[in-house]
Amino acid sequence: MAMKGFLPLTLTLLSIIATATMIATILLVSLFFEYHLHINLKFEYDKSYSDLLMLSFLRLQYNSTYPGYKVLAERDVNGFTQEMKDFLKKKVELLGDVECFRIANSSMIIFSTSCSSGEPYEYTGGAFIFKPYNPDSLVEEFTLTYNKVKR
Amino acid sequence: MKLVRKKQNKGAIFTISSVLEALFSVGILGIGFWFFLTKIVDIHVATLTADNERHAMNLANVLLSYEGLVYEKDGKLQRGVLDVRKLDEFAYGGRSQQLEPNSSLVKDAFRNYKKITFSYPNSISYITITDLENCTEQEGCKVWVATAVGPVNFDENFVKKFIDCLVEHLELTSVQAWSRRLEGCAVGAGFGAFIGSIVPGIGTGLGAAIGCGIGLLTSFFDPHDIATCGVNSIPESVKYFFMSRSFAAAQGLPVLIRLPDGTTHAGRIMVGVIEWR
Picture 1 (spheres, rainbow over the protein chains, first blue to last red):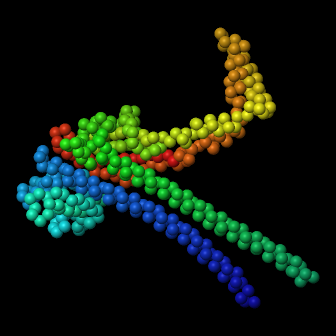
Picture 2 (picture 1 turned 120 degrees about the vertical axis):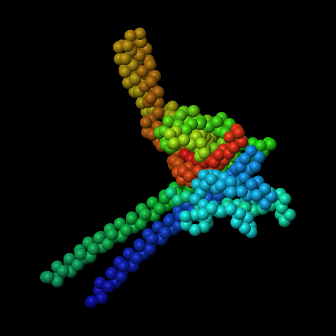
Picture 3 (picture 1 turned 90 degrees about the vertical axis):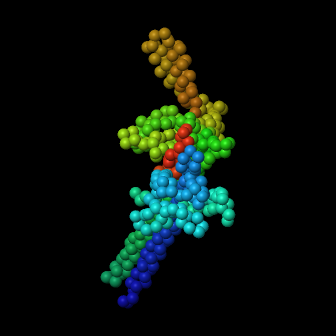
């Protein structure tokens, strides 16, 4: 007689657990799907942004005859002065709303600016440029890694 | 006697508790179903919104290679480098502290909008290009604004659908339909005759004739048919409206703006797409 109410209580408990599981599953699946959509879009946007920033960076006009990519490509021949670095820093920061950045090729860091928190790591854009007067290879791969300004 | 009454009540108590349990179950099921449907609609809208955002990004990228905007050197287009002379022709230029919808620059831009031939179907896109190195504290930055109108899908034109639907429902042989039209003609004629008698130069006869014609036309179709055709002919393409709000529309993409003297300025292109589907 003491166990009479036990079965309905168990059934109620099971129903509540089943309903809660169903709602949680629907919620989790939909949240995952929406997150998946958003993260894909963000990836596409960031990739587009980084590539365009790299492209704009290389097409900057340092002076009437000297574009940005030549400043980098011919740095071993013509030098890479502080004035050139300051010019690139100012332009890249304005172009991409960048807090700090680093330009590197496959073997070394060519130029980097300092971040308020550690190293630049958030976004990356890449490009191959023609590098004359180089006995090893006429093509050099550049990578621009940067952090955006937090607002 | 007491036992008999208890036995009689036993079924009644069981029935009330069963009804309560059933109502509770129905309520839980209803909430679950509502929750499920809401989430399905959310996912459906999220998918379409993602497409809209993607369209804004793609259009911005296409504009950065568009020959009507991009600087050309030795017959080659320089992607991502916008020519100021082409920009002045393509878009409406001005200065602005902030591009708000009710700012005078945006109003002027919409009044003098340039229509370009490529865009997404059933869409209006607003394009703003800002020269980040040509700013003053008082007037803001130099900004170019343009509007792009995409091709409208005429197969889904609701006016055509609406007229086709009305023509399909047109009854020329039904006695009831003609009696309704005659009623319309009579009411219109009476009203027209009254107006004709008041307004000098029209006359009762002409007023009645015009009134009859108008009455006949307005009662030519059954009001129920008009309502049904109106609802059925709303095209699929206007059931959803989307406006891109983040990424390309809000944050934009980096560009270079080339001035006539050969110098390059840092800039930003922002493209927002308003679509109806």
